[in-house]
Length: 173
Image (cartoon, rainbow, N blue to C red):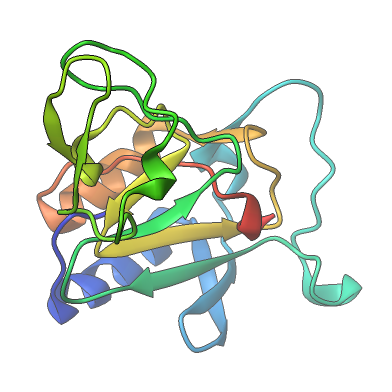
């Protein structure tokens, strides 16, 4: 997820992902078919994954969506089991969703253990939630089944001059 966003970066990211082989032709606005290097740019965990890379089977094919949210830093996805930890004391923050406006990254959440106030975007989410202004969503791969390779993260960082991170989102499978 990209913490800051401009329209110029959107074009740069799309070009970089095409040149790097993650994506190829567009299926519709901001959605792309997988590219020739798609499999190499992800590290699949466990047994051989069974994923469909072509739209022949309807909507259940793997594809990539580039999402942007100019303006406030927003929650771009999370798992149902997401439980962040306080970056100060490492205590689990189990009532995070009770924080008003938790979807906004700058919203402050206070740790019930050490009383440290931390912006939602700065909590330790362990790849189960992410905040930013832009995301590269890989659709129809189950959460925790794959991670982006260092090569993919480098492609994104080179295109934007910002370090990227990743998270899983159960709505995207």
